[in-house]
Image (cartoon, rainbow, N blue to C red):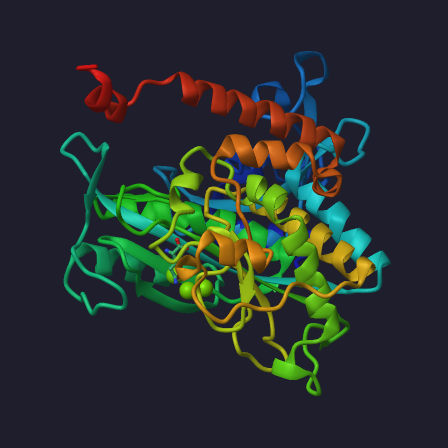
Length: 443
Ligand code: GLN
Ligand code: MG
Ligand code: MG
Ligand code: MG
């Protein structure tokens, strides 16, 4: 969608906009923003809004902390709530630049654009992405703080029309539609209070920008309903976790290069090479797609989440599934990532791995037709099926051994990512949990 500076000036006037929110994403995938009153609009439009990046995770050291925001005008949106302001709030997604105007290497959004440019140089025009981000709705307590009490006791695709969760989900969908999202599906997921809302696929950058806004909308509307929305991977032990299935296709002009009418299952050689790239680098990609300690509590058998590196055409237990689809919608569904992933980093990593797969032009292992969980260890090994990393620690180790995935993040983000995740792991291993007390107090 083409939006000009003049369109934004008009929109600001027509909507009585009083504040402009300039959003960007840090290395952990957390959305940050600088808010300025509308009097600063011209400065916003000419990339003159500066901020101090020193306290943003994964950004820069104190002595080089000045950063500049370059808004992407195509992301202009009038927010549906005012947050107590006397007028409306406008929002722009920005890229972070250095004061000399060059793109800042520590900005995950710039980094995704860098890998997308490599893709275009390689001859492809678009990397299209559809996310399926799942989340839980929990009740807030009387103090307005989160609990782990689900908002309902419904299950997969249940018709729960009357409860607060269903009302909340509907309002989320309406709000998203008001913000120009094309919502394709919204349904209750397997777990109590667990929901999924899917919006239409689009190019990687647009979808990454949108999923960030999506999370903000979900959290904000949930709060209005006295609920807390969480995207953490495994909020409740023994219940379904939250995945963010990542549906990927690659285009050359208007043509989906993953599709080949003449091939078996409509799947082109290019798709299979791309798939092989993903499988080859799956362990390091997991660090990026499953970046929290808690992420690995989801990647266990029994909850439709993957544990092993394999792929299939129908079965839902492997890492990658190829849903049956037509010419434009033939795609690979990566099932490991969860919604705590930084979408910009995740897409940079998967695209880099897939493009390298195309360069190597090697066929992946054969698809599995049965359930990987029902195979014995020996059968899995014989079939060449490796496990995904079992902890954040193991995933970071795999990441540190994978040059290609490090290149996908670039030198700056790689260094910061490893630092940040090793610290997170160290803090976690030093914490003493309820489980440990229960098991060891009487030793
Ligand atoms: N919640 C499951 C997961 O953790 C996915 C369920 C589904 O959409 N089939 O990935
Ligand atoms: Mg789904
Ligand atoms: Mg789902
Ligand atoms: Mg899915």
